[in-house]
Amino acid sequence: MTEAKPVSGTNLQKISDRYSESERLLSEARRYLAAGVSSNARLVGKRPPLFITHAQGSALIDANGNRYIDYVIGLGPMILGHRAEAIETAILESLAIGQVFGGQSSLEAQLAARIVDLVPCAELVRFTNTGTEADLLAVRLARAFTGRPKIIKFEGHYHGWGDGLAVSIKPPFVQADLRNSVQTHPESLGMTPSSYEDVNVLPWNDLDAIDAYLNWQGQTVAGVIMEPVMCNNGVITPSPGYLEKVRELCTACGALLIFDEVITGFRLAPGGAQERLGVIPDLAIFGKALAAGVPMGCVAGRADVMDMLTQGVMHGGTYSGNVTGLSVGLATLEQTCTLGGQALKTLDSMGNQLIERLEESLKRHRIAGQVQGYGAHFGLLFAPRERRILNFQDLRLVDRSAGDEFVAKMLDVGVRITSRASYFLSTAHTSSNIQDTAEAADAILAEMARQK
Ligand SMILES: Cc1ncc(COP(=O)(O)O)c(C=O)c1O
Image (tube, rainbow, N blue to C red):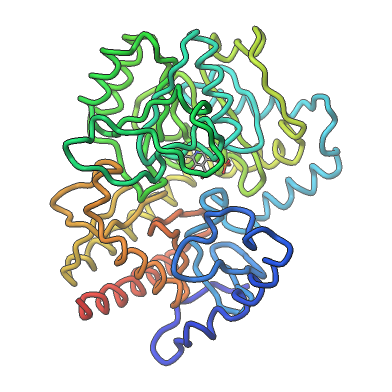
């Protein structure tokens, strides 16, 4: 399969023709599959969810035969691109061993040792199958270790879809004067208030808010959980000094600091955001780029906290530590994290080139937009660059409809970015992908400027 190239000018099709097969397959799927998809996130956006027939490297082909440069890459896991040879080999090798035994394989301790080697906070590791499960376990460990009930989470941060944490991910915007009394907002019907009554929600990147809360209620707080870079509502980076100060505040009141590194882990650096940003949590949660495309997650952290698993904390999982996950995990980290994480540095600098080009285009076409994040994962927010977006409530300053239009138009020319206008880089992205993407984005931003 050759590299995907964006289409332009006379090659652009009518939208209804371009996605007709994906539309048809979706309506067929709906007869048997609830909502036609297996994750609600796939129904977001102005275009139908693509039905993919083939993927290779940084390229995808959909059921209409359209080709895309793919920056969604499974929402992060495919850090080596699609169908990476090392991953296919690891999968095949795992098949020769067997899959699940209700018993151990030595690969478990091998992968755990690799993670302990790479991740600053990791002294012990426990495997799960998904990030959601690892989030649930981390919170349980924090409560058991501290003997305290409360968890602090932040508005706009995502920690999986479990009832205990699926609150205030996309809450309603509130008036500025009410921001310090943020309500806990369930994200789904079917959640009872008792499942999240011990979760308190605060605005992120706001030192006063967490300082005040922990000074007031710190003795009841088991853990403070956050994405160290907020990646699930645009990409928003922590303000200088924020993570360091939260670390200090947690230590002072005895609450555990938990970094959800499901997106940042084994992506921003071999040791994740904690290595790149230099702040070490007590526990961290990983998934996605840990095992390029195979379900796999883990909690890693302080030995005394993880040891609660020998002292009454329950964790199960028929498939936890399955052979394919472990084998792919080892192969992935071998590709991404050896030689000081050279592969991650290369993809990061590739992403930085694209960030620069996007910023130039925004300026040239006088479009209010800011790019936040790191080369390895970044996002474009359509908001004036003079006022940096800091947290969820600030997203009210973002022109959402411009974002949706940009995402849809990029898809129409063959560049697939996430519904929140963010980009995941992989080791399979090439310089010509970056060049083509920058040109496609520039043309779309120019058109958006003309239509203003
Ligand atoms: C930060 C974060 N935490 C947890 C999760 C949940 O992981 P999973 O989808 O593997 O359950 C995600 C998924 O996108 C995530 O981005």
